[in-house]
Each structure stands twice: as structure tokens, then as C-alpha cells.
Image (cartoon, rainbow, N blue to C red; front, side, top):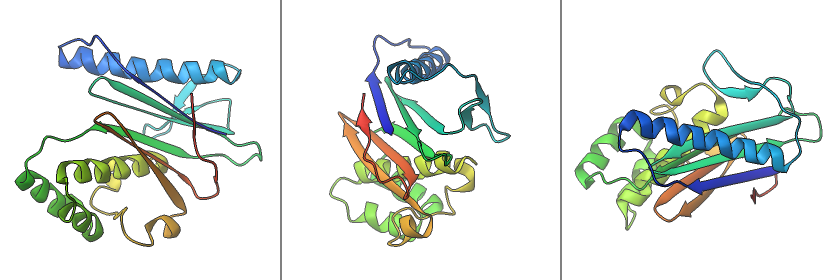
Length: 193
């Protein structure tokens, strides 16, 4: 079972710290809503050494949270075959970077196929955001942080998904790009709550 649950948030605080806290709290509330809807037993959330959250007492359930610009999202995967699942999700509002800044960032941090994808896109800001959320979702899937993957992976390479045993689903909700990364073994499409 694969669930994707999201929500646009308003009103939001203007203070940057308060905004981040409100969006993070909203993402956790989405997780709570999914847990309740699925009638899952309550479980404490723990974190790995690298900060990846997980349910301490529910090894057949994995989740990932993200938030950005008045938007929160939760992905939850439950495996009934006993295999520990893995899921990563990210969401970002369409960047407002200039073409020059996109090119500069891409040359420094993105792989050749990612750079080509952005360079040939009709809307470079959208393509840049799409690549960035794929990388972030993959990093969350792996559980070792974006720094380990930002300049070392090329998520748009032809064999990337097959070589890394992952698949991506991408969604656009108004101006928010969402990317979901999960194991190729999971052949389900997400159900929206």
C-alpha cells in the first residue's frame, strides 16, 4: 500500500522560523491523518544516525515528509510481505531563479543528463525544480542526506532508475513540484488520501 497525502496551508506566519515550524508541524499532522485513516497502531518516531525518521515499532511501514512555501506532503508505504519498505518524497515551489543562476547551479551540482534536461526545456525554472525534487526525494529514500547525492547522482540518466532499483513518480500541484521515490519492487501507484 502506498499513500500520498498533501495539503496547501494558510494562513501562514511571516516569520521565517515560525513558517518553517508551522509547515513541519503540518507535515507531521498529515502523517497522523494517514496513520489514523489506515487504523495503524500508534508508534513513536525515531531517527537514524543520519536523521532519517522512522516508526520505531512498525518495521513494515516507512514514511517521508516534506514541506515548502505553504504546502506539506506525506508519503507512507506499507509492505504486507514482511520486507521493510523505503520511500522518499520532496516538494518544492517552482524556482524563481534566473536562467543564469539555474545554469550556474546546474553546472556545479547536477549531472550531464540533468543539465541537458534543463537546458532543452521550454520552461527552465520548472525543469530545474523537477530535477531538484527528484534528487531530494532520492536522498530521502536513501536516508543519507542530500549532500551525499547532490553532485554525485544523475537522476535523469537513462539507466539511473534500473541501476539504483528505484522508480519516480512526479506530480504538479498548482506551482508545487512533488517527487516520490520508491523501490522498483513496489509496483503500486500511490493512492491519494
